[in-house]
Length: 262
Image 1: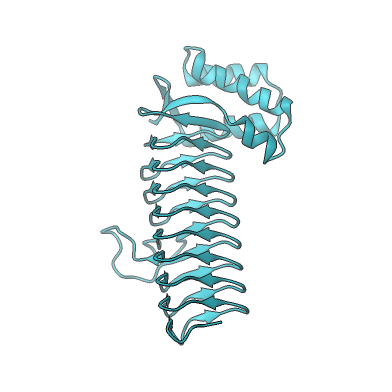
Image 2: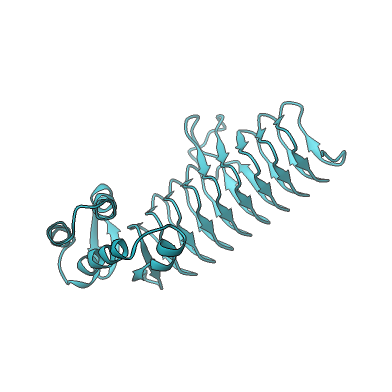
């Protein structure tokens, strides 16, 4: 159903069973997948692709122009995965280049008043809480939860199945499977509830994660030495590899009880 009171550009591509409510705006050069629903006063801007069964609530703007002086008006893109929910007044910016772009993975939930900046990649099954602010060029991996009013600064990377507690500011990189809280950001433990109940991790795997982070955050040694101890004391499993590979890939050092980029 497409309301006659909505604006749908003739160059937009709409799939089957799409619902567009009164006063919604769908720009040219957009793709709206099967089963999507665009609520009143929501906007889908050119260069945006919505997968199947995406729901965009009132006042949200998906594919807004990037807020970056490096963008010179060239074509750029935003992609939203299947079954994602975008709540009221969310703003998601397109990328700044004509390759790649901003991505929100399938089965994600983006709550009201949040902002996702240009060229940020949110992996599938993430939850972005109310009033979260994510800058440009951020990487957020699968199953991560950002609680209300979290701020993530440019070029940060957040690993898999992380929980960031409300109001925390992230200005660097957060390794997988942890809970982070407070300002300055502090290691708060292993995200065991989500890992066990929602992601199928075993007690043995969660125990390995806890052992690894005791070395990283609580052993009063360097990250280099902590990684050596992890490799010596914990069996070579995918969970151990996820932690060690992440830390080595982003070239982290430990500052107090916080990770910061060298």
